[in-house]
Length: 410
Image 1: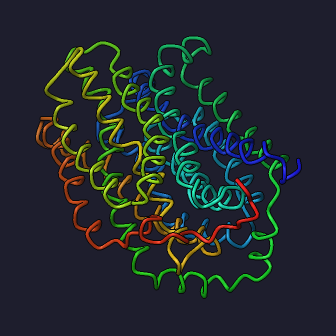
Image 2: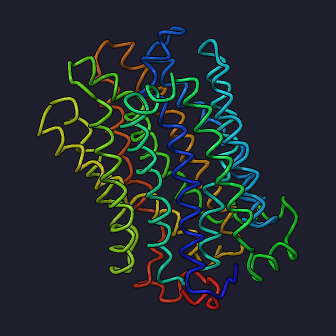
């Protein structure tokens, strides 16, 4: 397909959305299926948290590597390999016969998925103009909410009954993830800019040293870890917690939050682009989400629906705005965007690993969900510290933010 076509950026965006959202769909079918899986082998709350945490545990190790590799190999080849790993490992879950095997397979899925985060901003940066980048990132990262919402609302109520159980379900979902990667490889073409960057690449050590020397990258990683602690900790444990309160179809309530975040992903990125600011939007969203988490344990019915909608509105803009910041840093730009975003996601996935484990363990230890959910809310209130140190990169401060190829024209 011709890169100069007006439709090309949007086709690329759509495939990235399918790949990214499909990865989260494959992850998030697990919480609704935990009750069914526990009929095959026992799962405690701590083990449920560990299954989700294992997926994220791979990221601190492999996301920085994936970031360097996408800067060296280009998005086309990198996303193909990543999608095949996610798809094959996702299908392999049908073989699990105990919690430890399921945890190990989820870790392998996470190895593949760890390259998605660094690849997406670099791929989008090659086809969209800087002034539209946060919106484009928002559209693709809305896949988190789409994948969450669809998985939580359909895994146990539609897919498992239709396909004959949780084991056939994970096979079908895994195969679909691999197929999207093949479509990506056939359609996407690396730009002249990304090809030249690959040809002129530094050594891996030089590249990591250069990016690791930018303090804002580490500040951003520290910030992103905190919402990740809260969001993934709550997401893993909330469905069974609501079910224990006697609330029917608890996955639907969580799907409301994640579904709302899809819209907020897009509108939040557009709002940040319009304001020309990043930090204030990130701060308001983090504190707002922190305020909503305790309310999830206090309400049910219609009131709980409104709480989940508000939580989705606050969570949605965080990731698309955060991944835009490294591209806008003059010391990073598109040339080192993959490595920088990889380091950012390393911090975020440390948080995503800690969150489910800590929330589940605190609930098991103290016998009350308030212990785990209070921990998650506190993490969000702590975001004021790294955000106070983060450089503002929006167009109001830096009109030439993100030296993305102007030849992209979109």
